[in-house]
Image 1: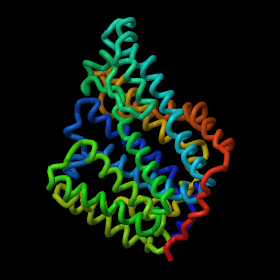
Image 2 (image 1 turned 60 degrees about the vertical axis):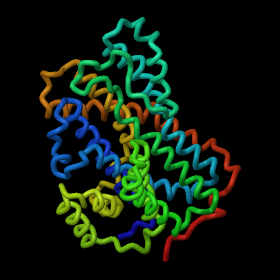
Image 3 (image 1 turned 90 degrees about the vertical axis):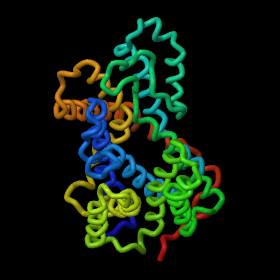
Image 4 (image 1 turned 45 degrees about the vertical axis):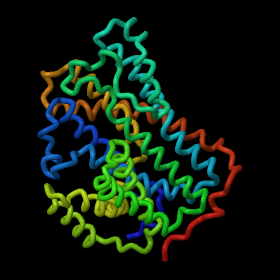
Length: 356
């Protein structure tokens, strides 16, 4: 299996991102309809549901591709600007639409009370990665009440990973040894130090969890030419994960197997999947727009909306909105990267060769 290249027409990353974003939508359907306790993947694993695993999948792919982006960027400014152009324009539009369109449609307050409420203003801080879940009086009577966009919490952690990788690179620490030490340290903290020393907190738990997957993805990029990529290893790792379901070992195996399985599937030669993104990359739009759309559907149609219909409607509307966002917001924003000056620290000065 050839994974030397990360060119989008030579791999299945576009498909996997779309799949992961769609899985987040489907997983959220259970919780937003008040049926989270019977979500099938959660029942199978005993701990994580479909959306949780899909987010982990996103972070593995991000770690792999962002490592490639860092090494191949013209400068640190080039790297940082490309990341900002991918994250912030669509996030800003999503936040504004949620605040000034979805909110007024679904609030129990008068329009004047809603607009003048301080929480309405605070919600706009989502555009600066300061996570706010609530708008005044919005979705108060939904099966999953008060939460307007429960997906955006991962974005500050995503940017934190970008920043950490950037700093490692600037200090010439983003090498094959360091890129292994970082996820190993996060694994140690997540599974042992934090629980045993009483250091557990929601922020630390999320940072270590998502950081493990991100930097294991980065490690796989740097070691991609020295790792055996074959179906026997993939099936063995998949079997270990499935057989450990509903045991204390499941998440350990999940952390250690998901990165390999993700990158293996991303480079598996499957007919036409490498061309999946030829009409655009809708995954980010699906991810950031779907939750408020799903809540709005529940607000209007619950309890008359059966779960299967809710899934189909949620995914269909999310894909349509994401496609519009890609063509009107995201793709034009990404075109701005050609205006980024190449001045600054050249990444090529510290370019890494893959492990032999």
